[in-house]
Length: 351
Ligand SMILES: [Zn+2]
Image (tube, rainbow, N blue to C red; front, side, top):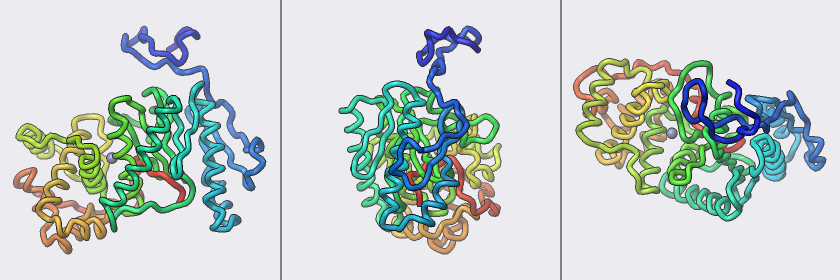
């Protein structure tokens, strides 16, 4: 689909589907690899490759060498410089107005004005310390280098950036994501003026849980509980309607995709009903098994979706706990979901 050059970077009506779309910006990173010779103070070169027209740091080459050769006491400073360079390159490719704003532990890339950007990084600092307080003994703020938040002002740029983290296929939409499998953990969000607090809070909780091998449902459920507590919003309205939708959907779809985490990216109702189920069960657990929730979260593993930890710590089968929400049925996870970190949960830093 071609658009007149004058509409680049703006919203226009597509002449094929007649929907409003963000017209791709003329700005973009077109080179294959560039080196960091522009920042001679960097000891080791951080190189980039082009991904969807945006520069993607080659962390897999850069970080092993950095960890090998830079003393631990200098790692924070070296990574701070590498992050500055990355955000300068990415900002230039995103278009005019994109700038980095720094606070004590956050680097934000956005096209917000100075005052707004300062508010956002202040919110991040404050929220991170509140999360660590609420989830004391569960959450952690580990790693070297600053926390990075990329706040894109259009859905087009956001999806263009996160596209490389998704395999081929159709997936449900998102407003933000914690990215943990690219060498340097970070958060990417669509900056929606009235909803950024909630999205950022959600992704920052994920970042503080990313060192734990949590099953996706528990990671999302716990994250939504904290998000709800900190922002005063209800991620899911618990009522009769949602309960019957959950029962109807999960009776006709295998819960295996829920246990493995796959259904959280479905492009049908399965995505919404995965988040809803995760939230409701976690909410119920936080009431009924409050004393044991901490130990359960610390022992749960994604390999079996938390099945063993649930029996050992809470003293009930996971199937029985889910029956309370889904009604009678065989809701027991089969297991064997793998040890690998699940993709697309966004994180923050190199560790
Ligand atoms: Zn989430």
